[in-house]
Length: 175
Image 1 (cartoon, rainbow, N blue to C red):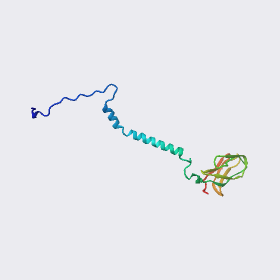
Image 2 (image 1 turned 180 degrees about the vertical axis):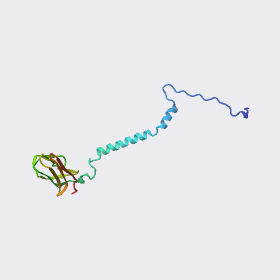
Image 3 (image 1 turned 90 degrees about the horizontal axis):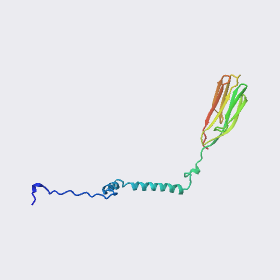
Image 4 (image 1 turned 60 degrees about the vertical axis):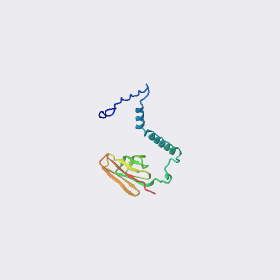
């Protein structure tokens, strides 16, 4: 009989099973599987989202958003008057003709000079501008820009050979 004061009988430790060559130990495979359980869910969700985007792109219909054909962007026409005053002739008068960047130039324009035109603007802002140079004998040169009967900018430059510029932006009005 065993002595009760000595405690439980001692057993020899179990021998570790060695994995055959080229095979991972079982514990490592289980640990990897438990640590990456979420990976198939993420990959499946990404594949589903990609398939949904492709389906909408190819079978979604129109390239324009719903109601786009009813959107009317604002455009409007404005009566623009450019004028340059001074004595004699201006060597050069340059002005915007289309509200964007198209210009025309008058060489040796007789002063006072005036140009009326209709400018269509929209959907963005339009620009009106006149620039003039003074001759070598006149004391001053002036310009002004009127839009729809309202003077929007005027300026004067003093001195022989000076230059003057008048400009403004035009916002399209909603029709």
